[in-house]
Length: 119
Image 1 (spheres, rainbow, N blue to C red):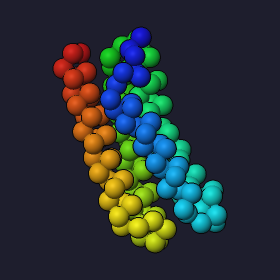
Image 2: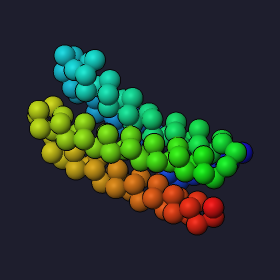
Image 3: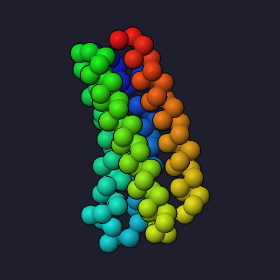
């Protein structure tokens, strides 16, 4: 079993979930079942898919779950853009989140490239 807790991308994504939860506390209650729920679920999907993939028996399976994590990261990006367009979050909040998403994306893509080279 791969130790997902040793992966930097997993650690970064866990931290990012906390930030998304704090940020969504600023959104109006009317978004409780809309943007808030979607942002939280998509952000949680990033580290959970990394850990689930790391627990799989093959590198090919691990890759599959890393691609799901990458898709969830893109989903968070889109949802945050919508939140900023609706003026629920500031442009600064969006830019800070985008910077962290860039870091996670680079880490995910690096891990994907590494695993693909080993298959």
